Length: 305
Ligand SMILES: Nc1ncnc2c1ncn2[C@@H]1O[C@H](COP(=O)(O)OP(=O)(O)OP(=O)(O)O)[C@@H](O)[C@H]1O
Image 1 (tube, helix red, strand yellow):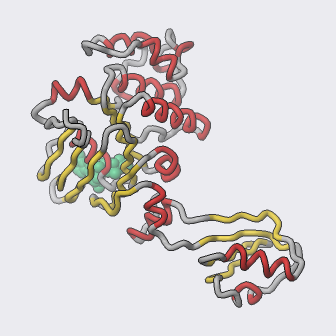
Image 2: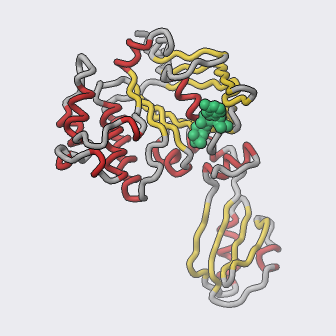
Image 3: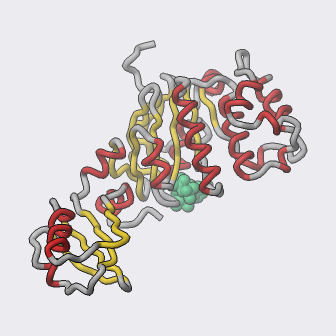
C-alpha cells in the first residue's frame, strides 16, 4: 500500500433527505495513525457523513474511499478492516460481556484476544455480567471493545461519551488514546468541544452540512483573535475607568462582586500593574483564553451547543 495514501478520503460528499440537504460538499482526509474529529452541533450532518464512510448510506454526490476501498462496493473487505461502534439497541439484554466478545470475534478470521481487550477496557471482572446490568460507562466501553475485536486498521466512534458522567468520560478518553497508541486510526464524531480539544490531532468543524474549517485544535483556536478574559474579585472597590483607560482593555463588566476585564495583547500585565500600583489584590483570579467554542462562534456566528 502507498504510504502517502489517506486512510479516509472524502471528496465533495453530498447527501439529501428529500428536499433537505444534510451534507453539502464535505471534503476532508484522515491520515494514518491520527485521531481525526468531526465536531459540530446537533443536526450538522456528522452522522450522515460517517454513515456514508461506513457504507450504510449511499451518497447523492461526491466520492468516499476508506483504505482505498469503496464503502458501497467493497463492503465485505471493508467490514474486516473498519471497526464500527454498535448502537446500544443492537445487543440482546441477557448476553454476557464475555459472550458478546466471543460472538463478535467469531465473525473475523484474525480477531483480537477478547481477554486482552477486556483488560484494556477495564471490563475483566464484568466478563460474566449480563449486558443489561452494565452501567452506562461499561456499556460504552463494551461497544468500543466490540468495534475493535476484529483488529481494525481504522475505527469510527460516534458520540462516544454522550450520557457518561465526567469520570467515565475521562476514562474513555484515555482508553481512546491507548488504542491510537496501538496504531489504530480513529475517526471520532462529537459535539463536545472539550472532547475534541483533548483527543483530536486534527478536526473538521461542521455546521449546517458544510465543513467550516479543518485544522489542529491549536490551529483553530489561533485563528480566533487573541482576546483574553480576566476575572477577579478586588480586595478594594475600584472604578471601571481604571481599566477602560488601559489601551489593552476592550470591556469591563461586573458580575456581582467580581470584575471581568476583556482585552488583547498583554492585557493581563496591564491589569496586574494598575492593581499593584493601587495596592489592590485580585482575589480568585482566573484568565480564560480563546477555546474551540470561540473558534466555532468566530467561524459560524453560532455557539456549538
Ligand atoms: N433519515 C433521515 N431522514 C430525513 N432527515 C434526516 C434523516 N437523517 C438525518 N436527517 C436530517 O439531516 C440533518 C443532518 O443529520 P445528522 O444526523 O447527520 O446530523 P448530526 O450532526 O449527526 O446530528 P446529531 O448529533 O443530532 O445526530 C439533520 O437536519 C437531520 O434532521
